[in-house]
Amino acid sequence: MADLEEAKIVGTPALDGRYISEMDMWPLECQEFNRLYQFYDNLREGRFTTTKCQKCGHIAFPPGVICPKCWSEELEWVDLPQRAKVVTFTETQAGAPIGFPPPIIMAWLNFGKDSPLKHLLGRIINCAEGELKEDDEVKLVVFEVPSHPIEIKKDTKICDRVYYAFERVK
Image (cartoon, rainbow, N blue to C red; front, top):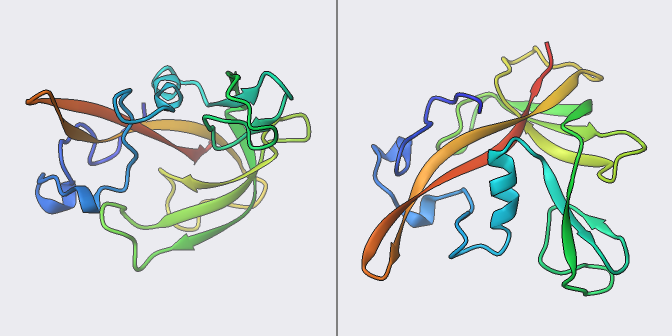
């Protein structure tokens, strides 16, 4: 997994490790709170996946619990490409949200004509301002985000979490 400055921290790093749920920008990933927990388990295994309807064949991203075309709940997990080309991008140096070190780079990515996922607006990490160029190749990066404490039957469980972004292939 990619190393970020705040990895392996319970709570919100910018708040000195205190956990304030209203300021938590990352999804709850554990099975107790999220029907799409398999997406995050797949990320932990280094797989970028989404759901495909077994009834009509529609592939949707982000993954869902029902097919947006035929409303079927018969879905299976399919792998997506882990590399893409940058079509265009923006870099934000000032005004980054709490917990996000600048620059914030968002790129419109093209996964190719044969991919079930054609385009995606994705975050680019581990890239200095001015380094990224149009047509650069990027690859999937899975990184740890602050853990989430949850209460289950009067016990506190710490749920480790991951998320994804992309980084420039050098």
